[in-house]
Amino acid sequence: MGEKNEGTSETRLHYNLNQSIRNYMTRISFYFFLLAAIMLVSLQPLKAGAQDALRIDIFGPGEERINVFIAPPRDLRSEVLFDPKLGSRIYDGLQNNLNLLPFLMQVEPGHILGGPDVEGVRGRDIDFRKFNLSRVDLLLTIGLEQQARGPGSVEIRAFEVFDQRMILGRAYELQDMDQVPLMLRRFCAELMEYLTGNGDFFRSRLAFERKQNGNKDIWAVTPQGTDLTRLTDLRGITLSPAWSPDGSRIAFTLMRDNRHHLGLWDLEKGEAEAFSLPGNTVISPAFSPEGRLALSLDPMGRPDIYWLDEVYGVDEAIMEHWAIDVSPSFDASGTKMAFASGRLGNPHIFVHDFETGRVQRVSYEGRYNTNPSISPEGDFVAFTRQTPDGHRIFVVDLETGNEKQISFGPGNDEDPAFAPDGYFVAYSSNRSGEYRLYLTTRNGDGSREIPTGEGNAKAPAWGMERDF
Image 1 (spheres, rainbow, N blue to C red):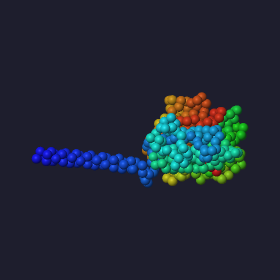
Image 2: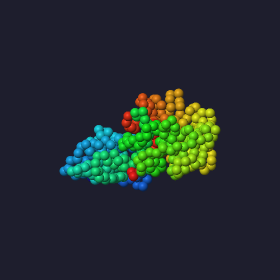
Image 3: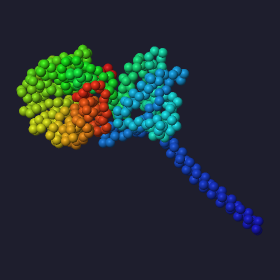
Image 4: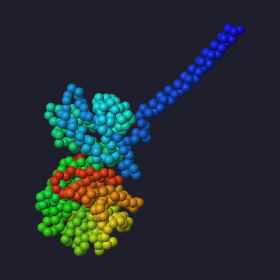
């Protein structure tokens, strides 16, 4: 009995022990299954909605931020060493271009776990895990193949790190080093278009007036400060340039021989002409989306806004008033025109709706508001306001009437101009002691100077670059 009872107790002990082990293993298996399921979900390629994770709305109420890392350049063929100067120029140029986009935050190489290098430029050569752990959202790789003569081949790729998916890849054949800035602008235009829906910032140029050696001429430059070019040499004073929609012409005010003239620079001819118009003033020309030219003239003794005909003669009045009306600016549809007027006793900003004929006042604060620029979509107007601290740039939402200050000095900030994407705003400022061009956004992101060389630079005007 005793031996049997002991056997029975031992059997029960083994049964209880085995049952506990089975329960424990069941729980462990469940936890491992749950962990594996979580890992499997996290490693799955992003589906339709998630694949848009890096596409951001720069026009929304709050900008998202994307962490981007540019890997050091690599040889496309490991046995060939590229010129380090070429690699550095492409790498630095790509960094400088992307630094202009406030919604991209560049990750420093020292923050990459395991080091910043990649084994190759293609997805199969990249350990995405270390970039994912380093909180990189967007990874760019640069591949170079040096040739005996000339820079050779360049491949640039952009990868979405979490998804391990290439979102953009381009190959270029460079004939000389001077083509590097254009190559980078083309790539960045496509990348920005993928991320935001519009890459025209990198496809555009700025015309501006620059004073040097007693004369003031029209110059052009990219928003990055490259391809600085003098367009006119008229031995006079040129003011207020304006691009035609197709980028083939620039209209401006020319002061020469104690008179105002309409100046017109032609891309095909590579030269400028001067046209005489009735009255004493030719102020602030602007092109409509159809290429029609408008400007402020005073044939009746007061500045009003007129259309010109195809041979640059006076056609018809757009805005006639006993007060001064100047500085027309058109949206991309041609249905709205912003302008400045003194009809209330002080300069204020108004918008004329061509479809309804309505003239709407849009600035209410301050006693001196000038230089309006309407956004391409016709939903915002940027303008200059005189404040107790100097002139500052403001943006008004035409739907809500809400205003936002987007420049903060010191000195005077003037001449705002909306970029073709409706996001960036260029303006001039003398905060450094002489006037220079600066770049911000309609949200008021930190301003950056646009290199324009020696001499005062004012009155920036955007245009799309032809044959980009």
